[in-house]
Amino acid sequence: HAASRLAEAKDLYRQALELQTALVRQDPQDPDLQSSLGGIYNNLGMNEENVQRYDGAARSYQAAVEHQREAYSYAPKVPRYRLFLSKHYYNYGRVLRQLGRPGEAVNAALERRALWPTDPEHLFAVAEELALATRLVTAAPQTDLPVEKCVAYTLETLRQAQAAGWKPPADGKWIASFSALKDSPEFAGLRGN
Image (tube, rainbow, N blue to C red; front, side, top):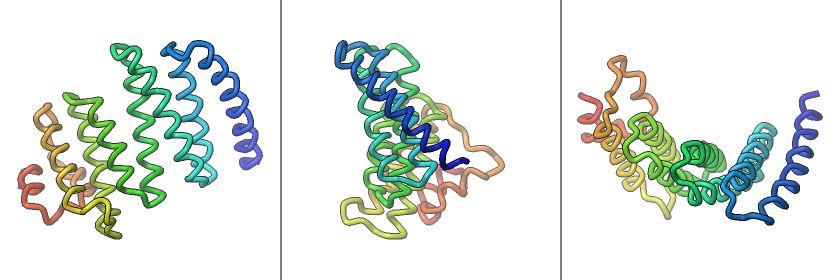
């Protein structure tokens, strides 16, 4: 039953894409149309991810990012476009990590970070994403992304979160997300040890 519902949902998303794409072609600078198209691609990506079609999910999330970025560029003061774009980047990065493409996941996280330069919670969440990518790079080093660079991005983002007002919770549970940085003296300083 679940497989047939997912297949049916995919067909409906495809139909919605055709209709929304036609609308965007008529008025490509309408941020609401671009945002809606990004949302449809995002939902299609989630559908693909649910059936473990990670390459298809990555393509869908990438398209979601592109359309939401258009909407945001046309209306940067509309909060929902930035929030949707951030969510699309998050989903895209998660699937890229699943596909073993940590370098691209880091780029998606850095784009997401740029959306929230003074928001402590979003910055901390981006730092967690970067730490997950660092763990992947550490396990299977990539020639295009040195581990040191990944660690530096993660620490930099944690510093930005702290500068924006993020305080490490006293329970220390958050530290587990950053296991790839356990040997970093700077990380020990940031976490208050």
